[in-house]
Length: 186
Length: 439
Image (cartoon, rainbow over all chains, first blue to last red; front, side, top):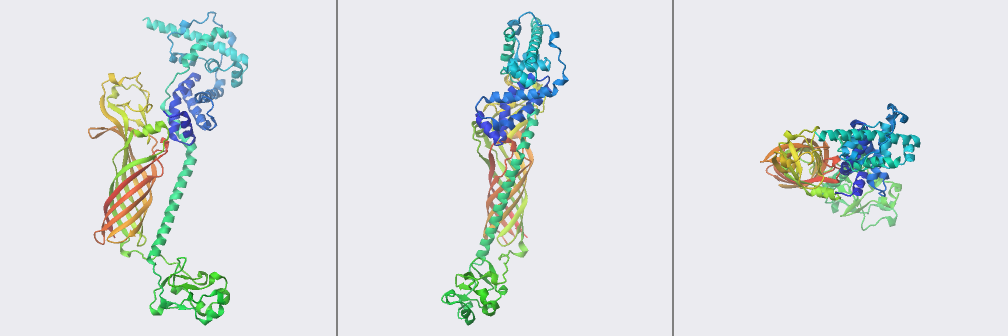
């Protein structure tokens, strides 16, 4: 397989084979990111397409210093955030105070048997605001300070959104594992 | 609270970290023209530059061949010793300073038309004058001192027998059309030519993937043939055009094809497999075909992976162990033929350009000599341009009919598939043979 540096150089020279190679090599992983941040397939496709256009446009700025995979993932996450920001007014998010927190600590056995596709399905069921904060904090590893800047919200809102997301996820996990168990038991 | 929930964060993070989802094909199909459009100005400039260079070279070659032709026709100085006389004319010698005339080497013109003198003379800068267009009286008597002594270059001199120097400003000159004009009655030639061609490409894909991909590809038997019409501009130069049909292709190894997949195909979409080749990406359009990669990695893109479908457990019928790409073109060439030898056996130099229109694009598996349709190569250029260079040997059976043999090298100025991206340019070599008829 060709080195990513050669592929990037080829893309910069307009080499269409390298552009296609770059896309095919990274699109599956990036599309998973898009699915993770979007509520439906159509939105995920739009994010992937817009994200790749940005990647090709900004390849010239990539300095080969950090991980290329991390660089293009950040572009894709930022594209997903832009998409979210353009739409977030359309969604109504319940007030955090109205959602009681679960008392019980999540049991690791609850997650046993959950596959990636299940986790992705559960995340997509989250309201957009919670989904984005959870993705940024739990998956991408951003701090609440960074998230507040990225989403133009306060740190407190970021924290409360994360808490709410976790509560919902815990409930979903419970119902998923319950359904799975009942299916496997016959 | 964060510690309490770190478990769920970790589960999602680890579970989704390396998760991959194959995107729908339409994303790339939508993306491709966007990237292409951004590249377009550069591509257009490059194509324009290439055309400009080719046209310039063609023009220069034409001018050069014309000059050579003219020079050959007039290679003998058409003055003889009797046509010139030593500078003893008292008019000129009396008017010019002593040091500006070399009496031993300089001559003046003498109108010798009445003595059956050839009409053409050659001057040093190869401009041909006719004696009828030279104003002789200004030499013999009408030329003023000022005109004659204006500069040293104004000095009239004839360095017989090699050359004649004339100040062209002082004469009414007219450039003649090239001599040796062809026979007026046989200016047109129609020819039928056909050739087996060897097609391959200059390949500069430097990365390992490209090299590996191209190593697995072999050219298929190619041919070209058609009708050409030539117009003779003069005795040596002809312009030729026509209409040719050509077929080129390549065999892509390391891909085994099977039929019978339709019974297992539950997927949606317009194609099941994509195969990377140096000519572009092949999309299957036959839902009954299953492709198995037996060569290099990552060559076949498909959503029908081994975990979805196991070909070994299915009832599939083997077709072929390679794919064959075939492209057919209608070609309209514009070539210049320069005749070097004009005897019973003529010899021509041929060069020009051709525009090639894609009329067929197919990918197939070969089954018992027949073709089993598999798909098409995506992103093929509808029109390509090529340049050609060749030699034409022509044996004149009689004054009208000739046998032709033309070994021709053809270089494609743009690749068949802009999108394939590899920096390779196809070329072909063919030996055209056929008959031509002059009228």
